[in-house]
Image 1: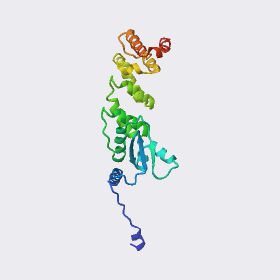
Image 2: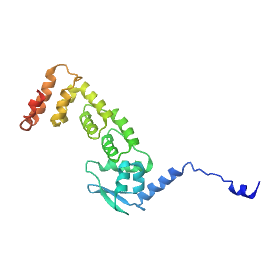
Image 3: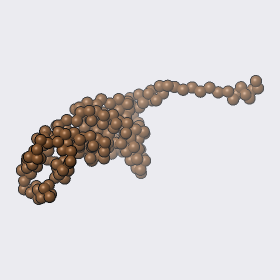
Image 4: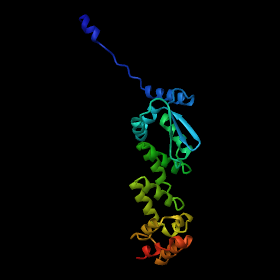
Amino acid sequence: MSASSKSSTQSVFESRNHHDQAFEVFYDMRANSELCDITLKIGNLKFTAHKVVLAASSSFFRQKFSSQDEVGSYEMSLPDFLKPDAMAAMLDYLYTGYLRINTENMEDLLAVACFIKNEQVLHAILEKVLANVSISNCLRLQQIASTNNLTDMQDKVERFIEWNFEHVAKEPSFLSLDAKVVKDIIKRDNLKVTNEEVVYDAVYSWFMYERLQRLVFMIIFFA
């Protein structure tokens, strides 16, 4: 074998835990505020992080940071509808890949996942949410699905509302619904009720809750 062929021989080393180790270091660096270059603010609470880590797992952050003229460290205010505890948990997930999802935090985590646009974690949260649709939360979940264009979730939640309308209509949250939402519900062909009086009573209760403001909508409902 010639000297030139010997010198061209090479081996390849692959570290199977390289990425895990790197993100463990990133996590420790964030915990110690080392080289953090972004501060996220919700209300009076602030969270420091690394732009490159957030951008790697969130299309929202990637687009936001790529379009910013600012370089170096800076502060970004996030919408108040995001809950600080949910954002803190999500930031930990972006660094560790671990997220605890339960019935107490699933709606808040869903709002954060939709906002940051992480499809993988969004799918996991949606599975938990759809497995725990109930009389007490279905109207809230319908609004979340509609606002974030989660069509599959919206279809499933609306079917739940149709099948359980008599109970849903007795929830306090039903009285606070927008007129359009109420109309969309009561006009559904698959609404399961024992008789039409159930629908009438539901609309009447909704109307009486704020009757002066809602008088104009009665014509719309029964047109």
